[in-house]
Image (cartoon, rainbow, N blue to C red):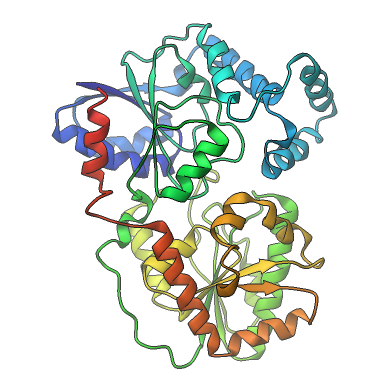
Length: 426
């Protein structure tokens, strides 16, 4: 048996390693397509029967096709595909007048497709170019992938592993998957609605593998002294969103410091080293460890990194968040999680997050278990309410919801089960 695997980021590698190890046990030969900086991680493993091909070595033809693929995505995708897509297109293209005008002119000659058929139309066109890169009939691919054009090869059986809860993208990914593994029923519905693939099964949440089996029942919290706020943005993120979050955390740090509480600020993995040290001007504020990364998805979920995350969670009583993947880690570990939903003109970018389907559907919909930041009273007084012990009950309730939503089940959705399903396709 033989399979191709495409890995374009270190986050993908973390998930891929579980599948590779299972394939190794079964004697499956692997053609691995990846970047050279990721190959360094591959070399550290005692893996055999792996043929490695570097994306950097692909010829000019593949680079040209990548640009054609990108333009087709722009031309075929209706602007109203989703609020997230509309925002992404116009924020990026308006910075380049030539590109923006080219986009508008191209849209006239390329009629927009129904959102469920965009990927199919793009694959049909790209497949005619006959790339013929992969030597196997099946390829295993992980979200997010920065080489979607490669997956449009004719007669290629594409299996996609959805790596995170927010990866059923609200814009077309640019290729068709013959089988998709997602976390739960809610994400299955998201993928069907936005990508148009319907052969979907439930997969393994490799992102949280480090927490399975070590869940602890914490002692009852009698007094809140130590809070954690994990940043969901950095200077590499949307500027308006980052500025809003920065200003909110500044207010949070100010009030908690006055109250004699300790706030542990957790940098987003893509945060440049030292970027959040500004908050150290407040008493009782501590900055947790920065993570080395090349860009947003290129940091390693190494054993040492995961152990450090557990150690940092042990320092705090409760997690405060505007909505980020780390809330799932905290909930699985047994920490109460308090979620903020912004509906105020003082934080316009954060308030627009209600337009993001994955947040509005899966997190903000639990209105009875979250805190809404509004205009009816001062932000200071709203933050002071966090001192109320009822916040613990609220946090435990939302944490319980997160655990039920994510549906971690090591007996049914384990890696062996998923790998066996994939090998039946070879």
